Image (tube, rainbow, N blue to C red; front, side):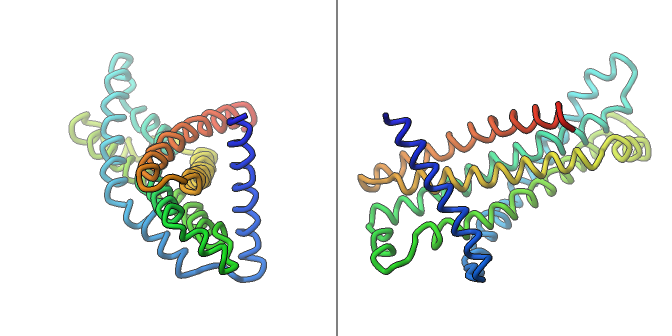
Length: 251
């Protein structure tokens, strides 16, 4: 019964979120300032940590690829492995995990604190739908910024792979560049961006749902915040598996 209740509540939140999102565009009622504020919080402020992590991931991938490819004398294919792995898998996943830890948890804490302080009830009493007022700007920001941050992570990760490949691994820069260009296809980039979009939506919905579930005060806010991160990362992996299988069989 508890699971059925949770599924029903999540479904209602998803329906309400997308309804008010479409309504905001249809009637030109998008909260632009709030959306920009969320873009800065979720996107711009995440750039430093994502850039550092992506660079190190690119370096690690290059070393691991070189370790295996050296055995068969195919060191030039390090570039292929780094580029494709980042754009299709690691770029979107690393970005989503960082955003879930930073922004998804912040969404749950913000909405949860408002719920425990009865500010959500105050919005309802004033005739303001809390989903339209609080969740829609966050959803729009995440739908824009998670793919954008993924592109940034892909680029910086490939720079990291390139830097270590032309120095420590001793691959010629022109060979690395040519192999990367030849290996990457538009489907690789599109696959990663579609995953990133789905991840952004999932993180927003989970953060909002956990926030709205707060009932017993500040202690529960912490528990729901932690739960939002765990559930978001779990869903990121599940969605990644789904899209990987989908693109493997149909693209």
